[in-house]
Amino acid sequence: MSNSFQSQWDQFYPNKLPFSHLLKHYFPQLWFRIHSLPESKRYANTTEEYELLLNRHNEIITDCFGENAFIFIVSGHYFSQSSNNETYDPAFILFYPFHEEKAINLKQVNPEDFDEEDEDRFFRPYSVETIWQPNTHNELLKKIADDEVRAFMVSFEQNIIVAPYDGGIDFIIFNDAKRNALRDKYTDWLSPREDGL
Image 1 (spheres, rainbow, N blue to C red):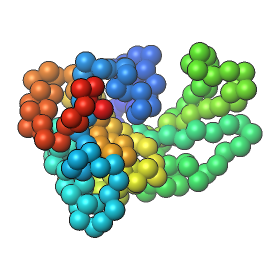
Image 2: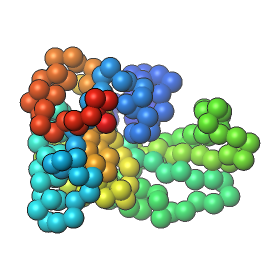
Image 3: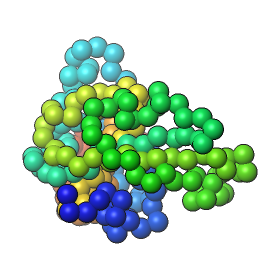
Image 4: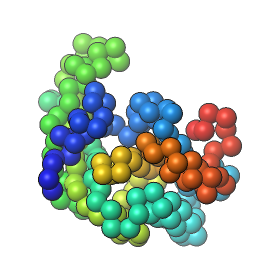
């Protein structure tokens, strides 16, 4: 690994927090979303639905990154100095050799959304460099789909961020031709809503 996750994140996306739910707001012109299941169903309930969800995710992410692409998987954990509930700590939920990044003081970086009572609120990103191959990250994708953990993937080499959530995947792709080609190919998986959500 030539550069750490944090140094590359700061270089590529300065002044942006590594929070998956903020990415579509940071990069609205570069963003699109697919839904995991037909008719925008949010959660899988059957073996067949989980199989369909994982097939969709693996197909489009592989089309996006390509096989054997170097990526970072980034997760995180909210905590306070006074209480740290390890139940939500991705290092205890996911079986990756995560590197702990520097904790982010939420009040300092986003004072308009946090008041004095939140002075003690932090978010600690975790990162791991790995390779994208189809079906090798199914456990991660399933846990995200079940809303057990939040995480996203980033290829700095390709300038692409893939952020699965419980219901679909958000894509941030800086290459217009690639983004448009993926949108066209997977048009049946896009949201029918005008805002794309």
